[in-house]
Length: 202
Ligand SMILES: Cc1cc2nc3c(=O)[nH]c(=O)nc-3n(C[C@H](O)[C@H](O)[C@H](O)COP(=O)(O)O)c2cc1C
Image (cartoon, rainbow, N blue to C red; front, side):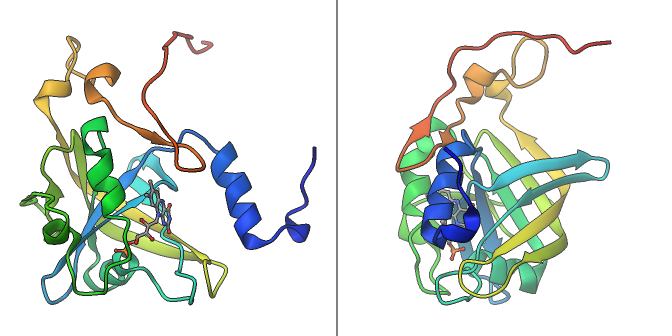
């Protein structure tokens, strides 16, 4: 079949995208307001960008009324965030923090997620996350405008935390020990499946 985005409603287009672009890694993003209230929310439109300068991106869409989500609002105001990666032991807490709480209420305290102080930025990281990237805002690229329009947040990685327990014998993260979950479409998630090797051409 072929689909023409011009003939699809926004919701349909979204469904087709999230059921085909899979599995998606999850950025569990912690931020802080200028008043010092923490915020935590998951985003699966998330990727690395480049190693020099060390950069990643994630994409908080506007809400259905066209307003920025709390995460984006905080980043615009404070220029800092932490991307925490999500292990299978954390999926339920991660899912809970996707609730739309009012601005000024912290998902950390509401859902009992333990914060750990960061080293280079004010937002805390998430206790128990196997990996966390402390970031400062590089730039925000608006994509479209109004309800559910996109925003690409590019972050410069200032500090990179990796739980020693996930390291393999080569000193790098072992995928099995990392135990990260990926987001699929619908309400589905995936754990790591079978692995295989394929070397790059010279
Ligand atoms: C696994 C998962 C992935 C999500 N990915 C995104 C995403 O990529 N972009 C987005 O705008 N919302 C995404 N959401 C929804 C946000 O987490 C949700 O709107 C949240 O309330 C935003 O919180 P905030 O207002 O505190 O920033 C996702 C939710 C879940 C559970």
